[in-house]
Image 1 (spheres, helix red, strand yellow):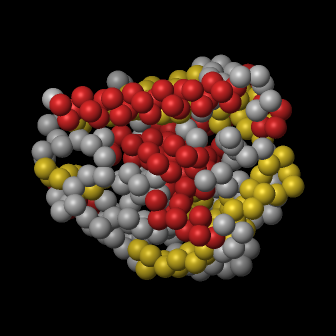
Image 2: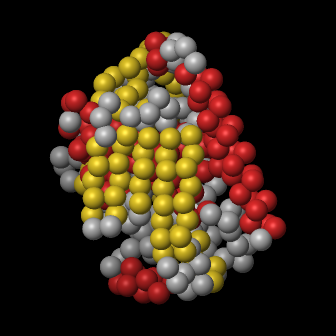
Length: 322
């Protein structure tokens, strides 16, 4: 069952790693946050008072090859989605992320190392009650054949389908009820991916300078370049769902509803979140202690999660037999 009170870290998380796009070594310190402050990013390499950027949807300034947030001083932080996903996936509401550079380190391209660091640091309950946004009306954003939408649903579910024909990715579809345990088990270790024929163009634009098979799945046509292969047969769509978790976390509170996307991406995700939050009739705030008391709700959530996991195992066995 999700926590009904806000939570933060018990101790600090220090880390030094590589930025995916800058290629620079970046120091990061994630500290406990005060109640009702949410996730805040602080650039320590800029003048004092100019480096604070709230991890919220209206601070998103770019979504090309990642989610970038910024403030009124032109200070920005890139590639926040994996850390945001890990914090949301672990039920962390309040935290301060200090950085001495323009990016969150990419680690191995997934959220799993962040989750491991959060678990080692420990999690503590805070006194304030936890709020969520309950989807009341369906909101959709389309771009040609691509679409993303939020639909009313008593639980948090994400359904995503991607299609990269004539590549090792192919067409993949997955639907999961999102709980802390499901996030950690089914999504956290899914890595970001890129295509070999795009690398030169990205480097010419000073992007993906820190990218390598150590922190991304590299796809070369029908082949996977990484020696260790894939962590799941459908790791690509799992990573897309991980990104969606991170992008929705920029709402500032959990979103209860069904996200459904066909060829989703950071741009569409943020356009949907902006349209959703801007429409006051599309959602309402609920306190999780009151919402969790609705008879049968948790039983329904647990039953759906169990059914989804059984279907996934059955599908895996079917693939093996085939």
